[in-house]
Image (cartoon, rainbow, N blue to C red; front, side):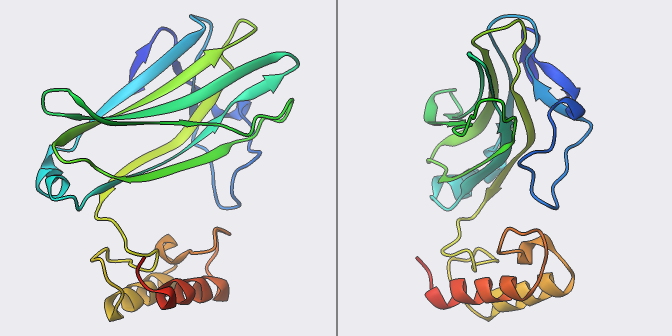
Length: 215
């Protein structure tokens, strides 16, 4: 749990118990996934990321955070264990500047699959840290049976379009060049269709986004 501060018995357990249902074709799990255990009915772990190095861009309104991750909540019989992720932005005095909550909203009885979550938002001026909190809540049974994996947070300039690969707020030759370079080197940046492989459909999707112009 390096980098995380766990509350109660929140821990990392062998990912083999989560299964791979819901994973993309090219997606894999590491050896461990995050989960609660046999402590309180609600357990959590948090991590605070210092973003003060991006202060100039943040205060000018030209930085966004992009978060991706996976949650597996579980419903079995009458029991439901729910995983949520809370993202809280704070200024240098620890005052909240924004907060967001993500949850697994497709929880079918007896189907233990991974839900992919993502969120991109402009970072409010004066923000200097971002806290990520994983929360597992048990509603029945003795253990918290929800899981978290593949969490990632990036700070970056916003795009005017998915084809704005260099994030300069406009579509031009440099974006086309970057796409072609990524495509020819088998870089995932050129993967536009979500099927985990590079082919004609990615070229077509990029060109469609490019021709649609900036939003």
